[in-house]
Image (cartoon, rainbow, N blue to C red; front, side, top):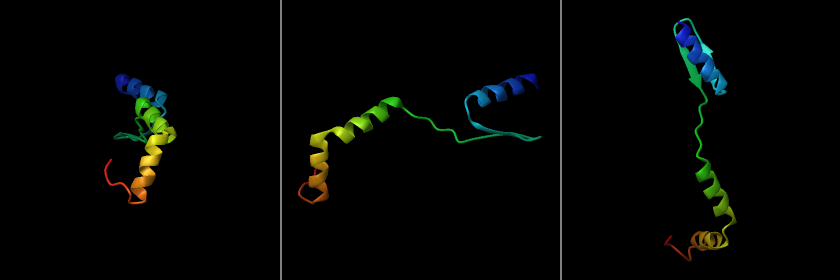
Length: 65
């Protein structure tokens, strides 16, 4: 039982929603992110050529991406 309690404490340290019931432990709201993908998204927002291409696609003047 001590091992299980240690595991629960480790999950609490991860800031997860943790609900302990007499028969189970429920964890929720787990969100995994990739900082590289977040950086790519931010750079894409500032990319002038990409923005111009997206405008042409929206206007129907370009259909290939």
